[in-house]
Image (cartoon, rainbow, N blue to C red; front, side):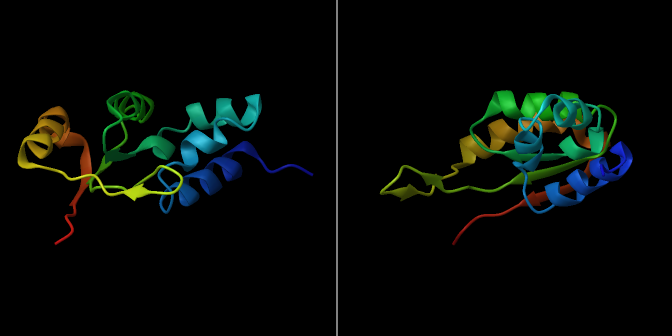
Length: 116
């Protein structure tokens, strides 16, 4: 028994609310899931601003006309034995925001977090 595509897409979207990498993961399972993921704009609406500019651009394109949830927060990078928390300086923050500022009409939310 298989799930209807609309229901599976909804499950993907719900899962992506907690895991911003889920859209990428499900799009690499099989051809059918990839096609479904790429044709589900709401799955790509969460844009986490980190050092992966190409990933942001792809997400924004795949979200099509959907509103966007923009998040700016440092994410730890795991290098095996060492986990590094990148430092976001004022210049980097301004650079990131300059990229998403033209998209303000599409923002559904903006979340900016900094560790003390």
